[in-house]
Length: 282
Image 1 (tube, rainbow, N blue to C red):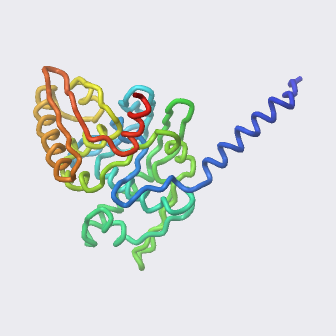
Image 2 (cartoon, one colour):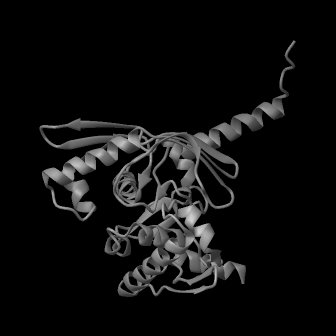
Image 3 (cartoon, rainbow, N blue to C red):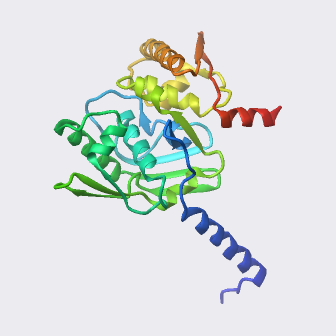
């Protein structure tokens, strides 16, 4: 015979469920047009890899390399920084309404936000990005929270008006709680277009208010690089870090680095929220 739960225990459980429900069914926290707010799970891992165009292997429940405290199992086509650009833009478009509601947006608007012209070729590429992320299946855990689902829940296309109706899973809201997200400078990211490793590094280091030194080998693993050797990757890494430093300086956010043997040390300009976080630690 099953033992009945005590009233206090049941009350606590109902309160927890109510709190989670209220957290999930609400607007995403607001952010300005100059940034893209992204869950750290997408930036501190190889989920969106620093890979070039070409063949996309299909992965089935493969564990994705991620920084400590993050667990990701992934099924779907290998994702890249172009996919991340589109996902960030979809999140940006959807932030003004309840997460899980229909986000109606034209292909023209999405491409404009991505800094691209509204051409047949770019619409085809955009469709591929959306389809690829609709077909994903993730199992992600960060601390006490976990999520299982796709990056994009569903997509409806009106080919006559070239309008999309996109829906995100409202459970994604758990990755915007507390300090589990980062505001990525969109102008700097766009300046690094076509340089996937530089884009990955820029976003990765943006998630850290005061970055620790990382081994070259660690960065190679976390970014999902397909460089054949660490020697080759180290050359790519130096070029990419130079690109990040140049684009960041142009955007008024100085970024510097030094590679000492196998260690990479980076200094960034913390965002206002990161500055407040650092001040609390003093």
